[in-house]
Length: 297
Image (cartoon, rainbow, N blue to C red; front, side, top):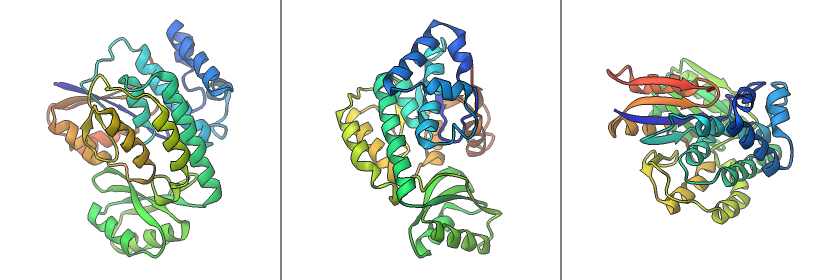
């Protein structure tokens, strides 16, 4: 049975996150203290003592979730994946945990990504919405027929897709989805239109940073969001990391491909349980598949 370790994205943050990892031993403290040095501010203060509101800002949320996930993976004695994947931001966690990037380099990339994405959110108002109960084809058709910019952004599980784009276009798509029989078409409380063309301005600075970062072959295949396929090729990893900003997260296909390639054990490493639920829905209760979570040591 192959082991697939998966890493969560934005939205799984909580006040006090990673404090137990800091207190649990020398390794966790060293990594989190190092994170403060790399970022040039005490993100650990916000993680350990900040409110839920303090943690909402994209430039805080993304590095905080990355740190919780990667520090946990690096402190976990049983870390031995046959394959890894991460949802959106979680892809950076997966790559760092699997040794494709150094802890410091990956953290710098995450912070640049988060900062540039937040700038996009402030300059170009956008939004996202969850569409429940329609097929991928139906949602794709609705987005294509809507006036304005709106695209499928997260293929989370069968019948659960998040769309992203201009706010007016999101509203029109939600109405069309309801008319088509969607069980729910609900705007999400997010700061902007992630994984849509509205994130295009962030590609310039992130592209420079990715190009300047040393990426090596990871210890196991990484199933990247853009293709949903495994790779260990550093050039391909770099290209897909940049494309990810404005491309859909193909999570359903990623999990399906991992299962097809022999994954029978899934562990979500990091805060929250969102990915465990998605993997359960994608696997459809297939016999022999074990799904667990690791949120602390």
